[in-house]
Image (tube, rainbow, N blue to C red):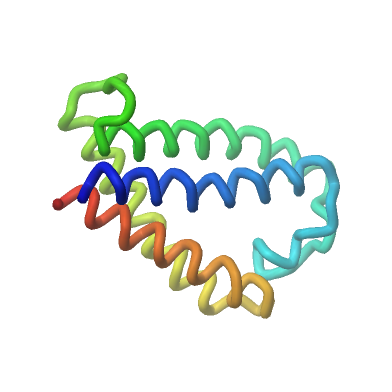
Length: 126
């Protein structure tokens, strides 16, 4: 079960990566993030998105490592610890998305982060 769930985690989290790339290129999708504060992300925040994108790709790799789909870059214990940190982050992110002022963020990002978090928790402890 864990191998399948890790792929689900990676695919769902990749949706966030696609959104980040689209925001990076200036598409007006800001209502799906940061409480909908910006329809189009300002250029200074796009630099932050670029560094965040590298971290997001790393987490997808960790999800796939947890499922045994790609070789471990670190020890199994370190990989699991990173997975737990990410699962906690996604769980808290779900709450923050649910409390967002943006209807689009609540409607799309809340279930996305919730399902990803649940899949990751199950992957970690399956």
